[in-house]
Picture 1 (cartoon, rainbow, N blue to C red):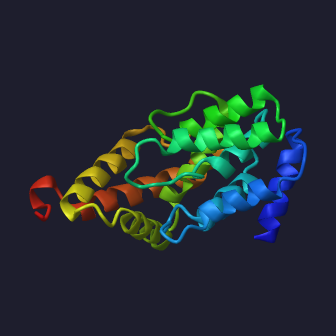
Picture 2 (picture 1 turned 180 degrees about the vertical axis):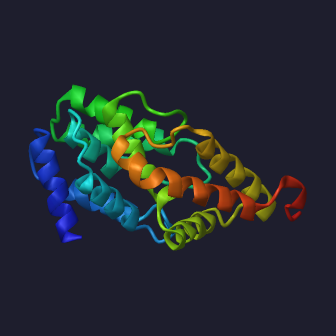
Length: 214
């Protein structure tokens, strides 16, 4: 965690922030480390930062993409519909307290909102951010299966039938994208494995008429 705090502080300094970012980093890391986060926890943040580091894509505003990754799941309540909006608001407040330029803050907030994944992003920074967030879909089968178990655990209050219906809808939406990944680097590495994982996951969920009731 000390390394993460240091990384966050360095990022803010590159963004022109003033003052000590220790308190902001601690609050963010506490949120990511909440026990109920079975997938969207610190390991997801670490994974996103690792994918950013290994990607050769470096669009203008690379640091803005990293900042968006730090904040994109700052608020995560599985049954809430406004997690991304609240996470963007958290970023706005935290960065403004450190005098980051308003234009940079609004770009970071815009990128965070793209992680709603309502549509493929049209800009290089947005494509990189979303590809990083969705790279889990194209991982090895065992890692993808662990991701699926984590998501189900986060949605534990949702009855099985409702969960399967909603999850099937989400996975089919991703499978329908062509391509799924917006950058060539992620597409070459994850596109085909992601399609295999998504098809298998949808099959495991079963057709609607085979869903359990209750």
